Image (tube, rainbow, N blue to C red; front, side, top):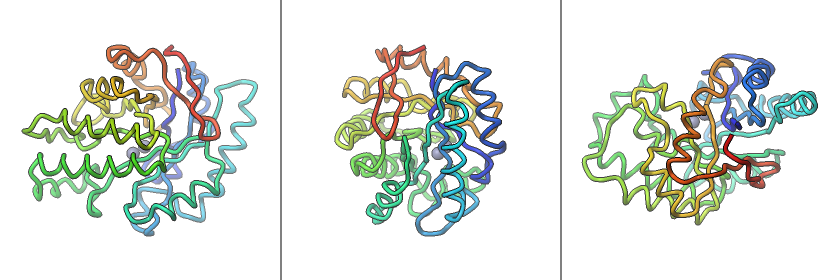
Length: 265
Ligand SMILES: [Zn+2]
Ligand SMILES: [Zn+2]
């Protein structure tokens, strides 16, 4: 089993040091784990969601060191980063990603027009939108992000469902557009089990969305989005079950930003 989405205390809304996560991963039989703390936002805003710029080099050094000290005992440790899609800042994002030795870059949409729609403290923002308009805006942004080619993986691809504001219109056309954009940008889809721990109580993405990705030929990864060591590997068996239900027989991990296929364990 792989877990390509794990945070640490460095991103300010998670707890635990990197070594604590590795110990739990080893205990739970995770074979490869990617740390994926949040890249600081390029506009310098909202630092309570991410590490500061002056911490990035330490983060990289810590993970690289853990990767080498875990080489014999396992799990394989990969250097990942979760990067927000910042429209209009593509070249700056690319420059930061290219100048660090990341194995895997997760692309995420956490904000629409500067509103962090996944922050439970900001839920009143939902009153400004009809669910249909919100889903349309979210998926348009997701498609732009995926098609940019900046990201290896699109993380929690239907995060807009987090608080269960479902659209009235059937979402399949949105899912199809997203899957096409994943193909165009060469991004894998992440099966992220954190949704089970949120008000929506289901994995990101939905079975319908994941099956559409499968039909479009999009590769898949797996992640717990752990924000504490105890969440490492959480519910990944349910993620595997969902992958199988959509016809996936393998997932991919990334080394040096190149996909490597591994069987579903
Ligand atoms: Zn995220
Ligand atoms: Zn995350």
